[in-house]
Amino acid sequence: MEDNTILVTKSSLPNLEEYIEEIRDIWTSHWLTNMGEKHRTLQSMLQNYLQVDNVDLLTNGHMALELSIQALNLQGEIITTPFTFASTTHAIVRNGLTPVFCDINPDDFTIDVDKIEALITDKTSAILPVHVYGNVCDVDKIQDIASKYGLKVIYDAAHAFGVKYKNKGIGTFGDVSCFSFHATKVFNTIEGGAVCFGDRNKDFGLNIYRLKNFGIRGPEIVDSVGANAKMNEFCAAMGICNLKRINICFKRRKQLVDEYRKCLSNIDGMNLNKIQGDVEQNYAYFPIVIDEKQFGATRNEVLAKLAEHNIFARKYFYPLTNTFDAFHGQFNVDKTPVALHISKRVLTLPLYEELCISDVYRISDIVLSCKK
Ligand code: T4K
Image (cartoon, rainbow, N blue to C red; front, top):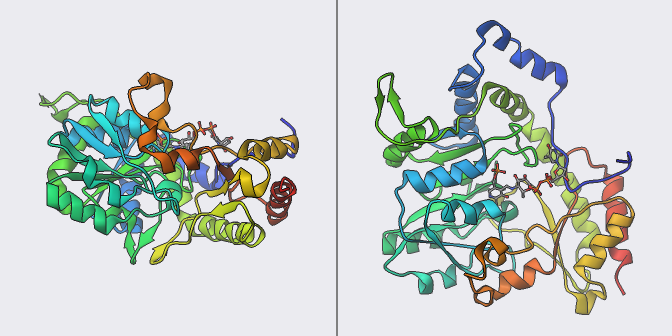
């Protein structure tokens, strides 16, 4: 790989010496996993940072989703969106439940709350919306619908670390919020994830803890059939170091996004996500939507032009999850036309802490050079 290659993202890392310092005492304790000191420390740091009642750490964001569905003992159908990473839909299907796909808003690509109620049946047990790219779903309306029909709400907050809505941590909404701390996320623990939930959901907390540790309740009691999804100490140590520098990371991402917006706003045939009111953003992704008719080039042509310059943007999220081969045509994509339209036109541009402002200008120039 050449030095000048720019990928869609690049993991944020702490100073190496700081990480070594953080893991040094593991060589004294020999305690590598199973809810050790680092695990407990990161858990309480995150509880504080995310302003939530409870946090439980897991091996990744996917297990957070999959085990949350199980811990809530959901059955039947779950209303969700197809404009997401495979994980969201797979977590539902792997639990033996049926995803029912709701369309998305054209402005911020979150679930279209006006289309949820028509999808509710007597089999519906929950709504699983996605704060896609860190854009906040209409949490108030979703809660109203959930309360009216007695449904649970699990947020896929994989993209929404550090986001606040009306000054409240994004993890405080719904019954559960599931975060991803994957290497590609604004905050990473190498691999990792977490569930956040309120004190009113203490039972959920007990269930998730047992599910992540084989169903073991005590030294001689195993009273449920759990999996293994414990975050290990090296990952937790990475999280401790990265959390200490998270504000530097957000500040830098904001600068880059501000420059992208200056270069790429008000271009015929190109739409950017609307800036949401009452939201403190995390600048996780920078999606552009290219309408071939007005722009004069397709999304794929822009992607290819960037690639000629060793710049690798990504089609997050194409294809839609309801079109995956894995489902053998089980779902009718025509029922989510906005999601289909966006997925054929969206491109996520490179965005990460180490990206140079000059690269933002260069990337924007190449994108604009495709316009006819
Ligand atoms: N829900 C949503 C909405 C999600 O987006 C995700 C994950 C999940 C749930 C599940 O959470 P986790 O179980 O993953 O915690 C990446 C990530 O692997 C995935 O975590 C993420 N979403 C998804 C949107 O993106 P890929 O297949 O695009 O990853 P990959 O390997 O192509 O990496 C993308 C770029 O990241 C590379 O070009 C370079 C950079 N990179 C990658 C790795 C692995 C690094 O800089 N460092 C690294 O270690 O899925």
